[in-house]
Image (cartoon, rainbow, N blue to C red; front, side, top):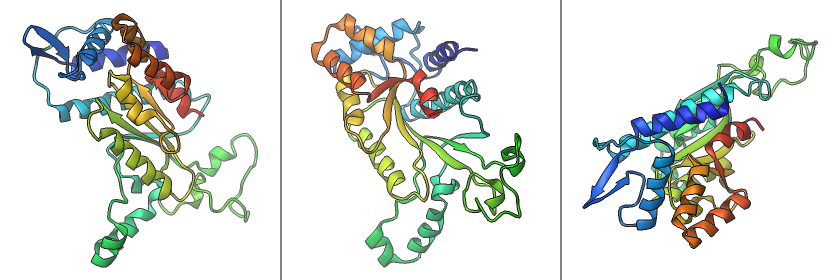
Length: 285
């Protein structure tokens, strides 16, 4: 199955399991549009038409929609990244809502949090929000020496080199994956939701012992100006990925909103916004 086909299946699941129509008088709009914003509703309606959405008016809470978005996005990444094994070989671990202390670069935080939790003065001075739980995590399991030596003798137990790298399984007291990617999923971007993703990213940057994982965000937000609140700037998030970027571009062509179109163009040309289908390739870098 190609990435294109997986993307189609991804959108089918999003349409079936998440997208719902709301009514405002005679007007209908999808549940990822802003009821109070006509442009948001027009863009969202165009996107679902392009995706072949079948009308569904069943109730679905925002929390449930967010959880489904995480699961469906995780499944897409797992399936699509598997197609790129020849580019990024390894044994990979995928999960939703896993604590970063489960991974090699951040396992020290579990001990730190325990100590701080037992001392109010330390908790007051240092804070307590060290261990975050990203919406989606991708980890890589350490490699046994047999795999490392598959083509030729690279390492040996008796050697005194490469004894500290977490990629080598023989160096690990217990099995602990290396965090490869932390992915924040935002079904929509309202109020401070974008700031939450930035805060999580800064936590990952500051508290790691080892290399920084990919830190990205995925959203279905229809308004480029709101996507910009998360995507603009550098230093925290690698990039933001839209669940249907070509469809968003087409929707803006149809609505002819110059301000939103200009913002979208700036985000794309500035390499701050990409399509969900780009993400598995970027994770292979």
